[in-house]
Length: 230
Length: 301
Image 1 (cartoon, rainbow over the protein chains, first blue to last red):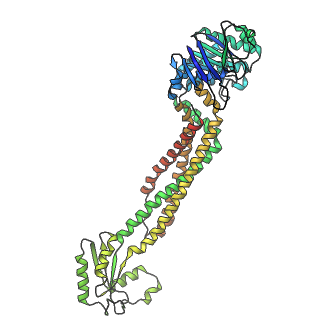
Image 2 (cartoon, chains in turn orange, cyan; image 1 turned 90 degrees about the horizontal axis):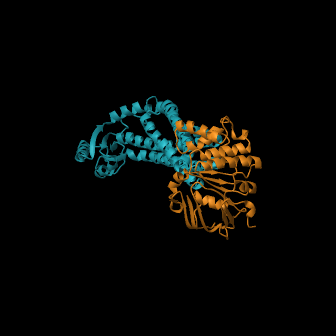
Image 3 (cartoon, rainbow over the protein chains, first blue to last red; image 1 turned 90 degrees about the vertical axis):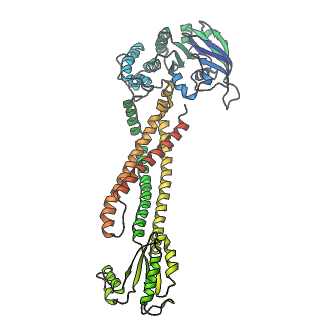
């Protein structure tokens, strides 16, 4: 599903590469945690996968597509195969829950009929049935993140990327979001999640890829955070 | 994207950015009004040239009893007059038509022209010189006829009416250039305003656009709402400008100027209507270009 082959990333105004010679393979259907302290390169790794950044060296393949050679105008179509979730939810404050989830379908030109069928399904999946008409400000943080997960998943992506999705949530609420992501993972969607959250990582017992100053220092199946080489 | 979705987004965007939208509409309206006026002034000058050049004659005044020109020895004789007439006829086709005006006829015309003026009482019927009035195939061929007849005995002077008008046209041409210059400056201001408006709108909606990008919206569909907003403002502005132009034609030209200046051929309704599409084209064209250019910088995919 995702193959990093000797990938390095350097930013113009930094003396140290953000990623240094990364080799990483993630298979279809896997659930992978990217862990590491701030500045370790987690976010850079995610940004390279969606072609928000270009690798300085090496090649990246996502879903059979060589990301480095992807033409700019093909990037939108490429991104339709993936969903992205952010720490700050990134909901549209003036739109209802239904419209926020529908937005993901509107902007890629889905018909009204498809939207009316699919959005309630997704809202049901993320546990927000009955709250379609609420505005984001009328929801709790956990509920807002559920809307964001719904929007990311509404187009049935093969890959879901999450950048600190529980970073703004309390532990109990975070567990709910993780259960939701686990459920989505079981439908066959690959999930890559960058996080600091020790409790969550330990609880889930999924594959852990740990980054430190641009290097992969650990890659462990069913790992726990406590084993981190500090 | 569905048209109804785009329309809804457009409405939201315009309302959110209302003050800038109004500024944009006014700026577009002012610059396009000036632009349209400059275009119409050119038409006006062409029309007047056509009207006047059509009526322009070369007047060959013949010697009278008091003439002092070297070619004059008292009143023109019958032989001299016949020779001049023959010379004029010999210049066909440069000479398109001609006629002879005797002193008495000149006096009649003078009386009509200055009807009601006390000056008539001071002019005797014989004070006005007799003349040949020649119409040329092209008003620019004055030299051709002047060189032949001006030195003939019995010709007092040869007058080119075109020279009298040229000065007037020079003034009009100057006004037209000034209007066009102001219009270009205003269009430039409009371009800057469009760029600023779009930049602010893009910043205000960076959340939407980042979400759109992350779900895989095409660059076109991300940029379209911004461009449509600018185009809507441009169309409204062009509409206002068109209204002003039509108003000027109706209330200033037709109702005020035309009745008191019957000797000027003013621009027609057709002339005004012909300018309007250019207003819309210029307004929409510049805003689309300015908006696209700005978005390229501020909404990188």
